[in-house]
Image 1 (cartoon, rainbow, N blue to C red):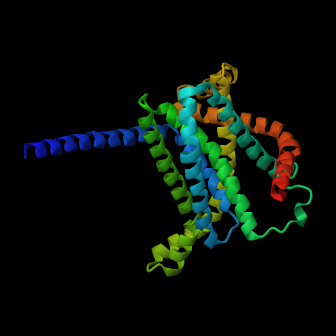
Image 2 (image 1 turned 90 degrees about the horizontal axis):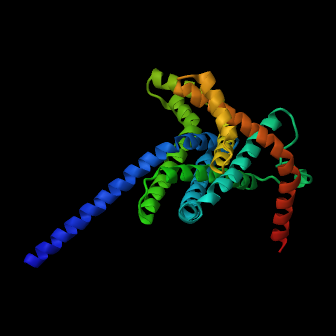
Length: 320
């Protein structure tokens, strides 16, 4: 009997340790995730544009498809690679992030150029008019584009989160980072689903509301959402440029060139003064302008060199 009681006591002790470990993981994940809040907001702002133009019945399936791609990005690719690089090759992280930041600058600048009527973008190319653009193919392209952009934003989120995790053993870091990945992905794509389905909810309220206030609120939602979605598209493009520029500036500082970061901070501090919010906003704007400038430089490289080579490689692989 005493042996059984001792065993139960040991089990209770192990359970307490496990519970404490779970609490530690969740607490560290919440703190680490909050450090990446800026990139999380950018991710939520960028994604809705990828479902714009599709029928209402395809919006949630596309969001779910992108969300699954985001889980895969974070848990299958970025988590193990991030932990390995952090422990064995930390110097490789800044240039890899800068490469992803350059892609965000390119994508954002290309959208700005398209609005201004400069060029056609890397998605327009010779022979495209002869391709059959069926809805399934368009959905495939949009989902792939969203998952590719998510990969870069997720890399930023995971890197910031990893840096914010207190130094501990490998498995605790892995568990915390996995928890961050799950929490953030659910929050981002849950928010995106609510945003893109808000007009449908408003229409249902306007048509089926039992009281006038509910019907009026529904009509208001339906009226506001198209403009809100356009605004979100603009915010998403600005977020690409801001995050891309910030990644590059911060990466340069980590690699030893502090000049751009010091200049941006100096300008923001001189204009914003003691206001932390004003300094942050000015820094974000300057990072966005730098991202736009870098993107404009990269547009001809992307459109004339990288995209044709990539498309030709893809065509050769599809024929083999």
